[in-house]
Length: 328
Ligand code: AKB
Image (cartoon, rainbow, N blue to C red; front, side):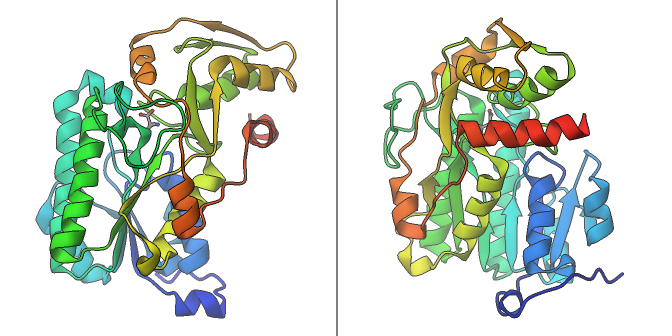
C-alpha cells in the first residue's frame, strides 16, 4: 500500500528510512505521526509487540510486528525495509522495573544490545535512544544536575539506562555507530497515557482533575522533579537526530523543560478548575523520586545542538487543559 503526504523539497533532501521500535507507547505513539509528517508516511515504519497501535498510526503508514529480543527478526526487517535510522523507544519504566527487575533488565538491555549489534552490521546511519533522569541516583547533586556527574542509580531501570549510555559511547568509539541519546525527564502528554513510571502522576492528575475534580497523588506534595511537555520532547528527538555530528562532543545529553512539585502543578490546575482537590498518599515511588534530581543543567545540549524548549509549567498546563477538556 502507498501512503501519501505532501513533502517539501527540504524533506526530500533529508530523506531517511526510519524504524520506530515501541510505537505504541506514550512517546512512540506521537513520535510516529510527527516523523511521518516530516519524512514521509512510507518512510516511517512503526513497530509494536504487545500493545495495539493507535488507528492513526495503522492508517497512515507501514506497521509491522517486531520483537527486538529476536536478533534474526531485526536483521530481516532492516534488510527488507532498507532501514537507515532507528528510534528505539521500547522500555520498561522505573516503577514497573522495581516490581519486575529481571524483566526490566531483559527488555531494556537485551533489546538495546540486539539493536546495536544488528545496526553495526547493516550500516545504520543513526540511532536515537532515550536515556532518562533515572540514570542519576541519590549520590548525584540534585540541583541543576550537570551532564557529567556521579551515575549511581538505585533502580533497575536506572541501572539499565547507565549501562545503555556506556554501550552508546562504546559502540560509537569501537564501531563508529552513530547513536545519540537524551536523558528525558518526566514527559507530560495528552494522547497516550504513560505506564509504569514514577513521573506518571503529572499526566494522571490532568485526567482526574477534568473527569472527577480530585486526585490522590502517589508522591508527596513538595517532591520536585524535572519534566517536559510532549511537543518539546518530539522536537528534541528530531533536533538531536539532525544535529551536525561534528558539533557533538558526547553521545548523551541532559535536557529539561521545567521543574515543579506535585503541589505546584495542582495549584496551576486549580487556576482552571477551582473545585479541584488533591491529597497525597506517597507509596514506593516516593523513594524513587527522592533519588532523582530536582532540576537539570542542560547547557551542553543548548550549546552543541541548540536545544531550546518552548513550554513551562503555565503554558503546558493551559494546553493540556484545553486539549483534554475538549476530549474528555
Ligand atoms: C519514569 O518515571 O520512570 C520515566 C522516566 C523519568 O524515565 N518517566
